[in-house]
Length: 496
Image (cartoon, rainbow, N blue to C red; front, side, top):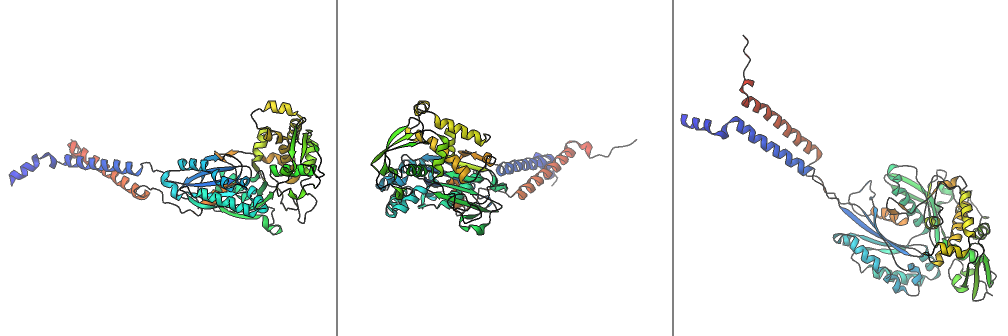
């Protein structure tokens, strides 16, 4: 028995110091392991959505991505990629609908490469058509249906979750544009004062804003309610079909050619500009088709005079400012509450004013008009020399488009010299294009189930508990080791 006791005492693994050391090492390893596992990088899961904006003049494809987990029940979507479809808008293929679908193939192939393959089958794909298809549907619903059939057939060939193609109402287009502008500025999440939205396309224009003085009962058809990030927003919005810059130009020319002249001197085009135009092409839109003069020749000479003030008078004739059955109106008898807060102006607003170098928000309205007047008065041959890279068709229309924008904002929407400075002309906000598509995508994410994100292996409370216990064990072991390593710690000092 004494021999066994002696062997145990001689065995180094049975000494207190060794036992303490082993337990200490185990505790340290456990502490480090838990810390590493708990704090390892968590891979973010993303979902994707594709929206095709089929406008009157062109189509664009937008890819959005957002974290799989939700933020206040609204997905945090951001623009990942954009592809501009070559050619005109799908409404221009009314006579050859198959080509409308074919035109989308190149951008759809790009989408396949941009969205991770494992996400293809669950990525929703939407096509929203705006004013161009609204006009085609009004003019020839059968042709409109055939264009959509061709588009759907083309989109269904791709491995995404096709959710349909449809015509957005003007109200939807305006409201979703408002959502985009305020979302990108983080105004919705933070509950800040919202920004109004001004959208201008080729065939329609939209105005949307929140007004504290807006009495919904006065014009309920112009009211839209959103709930985003836990807040409710009552929005005034209206869309004016035929008041996009391309269709307004047709209306202005229709007014000047109503008697069927062989030549017109147009103050909205530069001095020296001259082009032979076809009456049948000018009047082939529902916005002006009923105004075609009966005695018109086949063509007319369109020449420029370059006079801003006279151009404004021409533009004003496309508006009706006389009839209003409400307490106040914008134009054409449409109710509009008092303007409120800042506004973001995008799409054609930005592109036209940026070309004219008139996007500076600090520039007084009178200076904007003066610069625009000088630009319109510049001879056509000088304009062509200054901008050789711009296609002639677009270059010729900037004087008219700039004049129309100023007239629409001031005479149409009632912006004054003071409130004009509240308009910010924007192309992008935080790397996302301003427009209705992001707002549309944000709304749709509410219908996409949230995924549970990858979470740490331990809840926070459990992690803190293990770390605390491990630290206490190490501390106790450290004190015990001192007692064994330094025996003097165990003895009571002897006082002589």
